[in-house]
Length: 365
Image 1 (cartoon, helix red, strand yellow):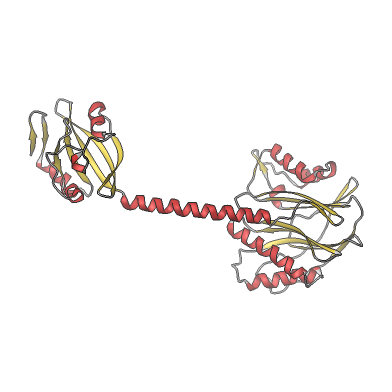
Image 2: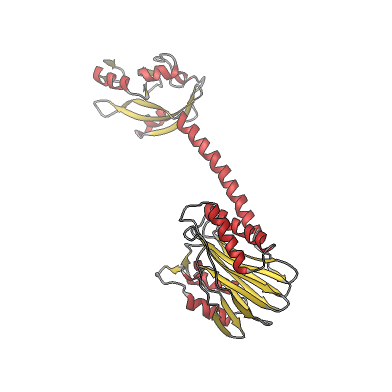
């Protein structure tokens, strides 16, 4: 039994046995900062028996700690915690008061838990997260830079709004030159969002441009897109829809088809708005081959076509009301700057964005 009469500290042999059996290092410190007991684990961590030393000497320091938790515990009776480095190891130190039979604080028990491995793991995770964040930010810039520039493409004028629900988006669209007479246009919605969806969207962009350079038939372009996609052998839950068009600048003719895109584009002439009706299968592993019906539309100056994804119409308010297709149609009927107006109306709608948002306006000049 430890029995220090001047401090009235009494610890039984059973209590000492409990302290000595603990995995964590434990030491007992009196009111004068003297170490009066250390358990076996503490001796092993420090490498020697430090009984009789001052508390700071017992952890290899030459002067009192700037933050002495034992003194604070003695002064307040509260439990305190700090981090301490001893012999290149990191310890989580917790100090607790020891009371006499009269209810006076006569000593402090300090428990040293070795957290070196946890701290190293934490630092490793932080570093990896920093790298992953940097990689994601690069991917975001890359994806944004892959969007077409707003402005004039021959006798087309384009405008759009694009707002991912996460850092990276599964929505992608493009307006690109095929040859001196033809311009490719599409709106694509990859299932899901985030990194996997964004990688597929980048694949769509590169493949559509590459195939269009050697094939002008919009149906055959989509057949080739489907063939190369299933050759990638993705899981069945990876697929996308795409509404694709080719616009001839000379004839002002738009040829288009729908590969499973459930958001049919709007065609606006003067103040009349209607949908471009078309049906077809999405690009996925379910079908070995696909064949799409191609439609044709003759356009004239000031006509507009508005492409969009379901992140717009399926956005819900906090009252669980959908933004909806009718609301979108009314905005298109009444507005000139359609993409900007739609985004503003969505913000006023106070909906919670759960999916990627993309809207593209094509105007014939």
